[in-house]
Image: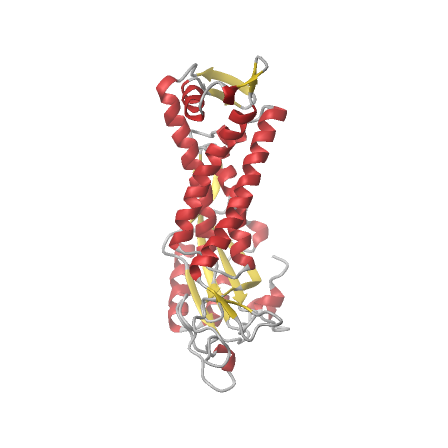
Length: 347
């Protein structure tokens, strides 16, 4: 078994492993494995779509879902008086973050469909489009708002409308379903609240970008890896959990992936997680084209946020590696050894 660091090209012997040969051979077409080749029926060879064009395609996908999200938010506001994007939770713009996340769905599905890992240019486009989504919601209301039988857009400019809107908004605080306080007209402080919402839109969109950046990717084939299995384990003892992480990290570094499986399987199964403080997730993924496999371990700690609990990833505890298609046997399946891809589908 030979390993390679995540993001690097797997070290594979020549010969039978020809599937790892460069996609861009002199006989087959494009010279950049990251380029997207489209073959037409009547074309003499593949046509390479460069990174700039693919950035535009992915950006267009994100812009489309952003426009649809803006229209949906406007409709909900007009039909049900529900300004979801203005909702905050403990001064966190939760509604804006959710709206930005939904608006950026096109980036995710576009990148997955075209098997394209987003670039920094995409990140800038994501932020720009997400901010534009915030203003598009307000622009839609500005264009169709009718006061006294006359459209507001015929009486003032969009910038004047926004200035009036931001300065005359107010915040109402709720505990459960009961409102307990209100700020009244916020005046110039309304701009701060608007900036908070803009930041929420941007944060929701950027989270989609980071999600795509985190997904394991086969640089050789320019494809996202497909999931085979996922196994989650829990632990309440910090010393036992830290020991497991240390031992698995050592096993990763030395290429003893079977020990990684064994150490992780020794923790508590998912049925006993309700009062546990820590959890770890072991993923197995593979490239559908060349068949290279990927093993990844992530660790999380349960932390309190406001009145609830969330799982926060432990920084520095993530371990990943590529490996050849060698079965990894778990101690739990000693009677009938099977690789994790068959054993863990029920988790």
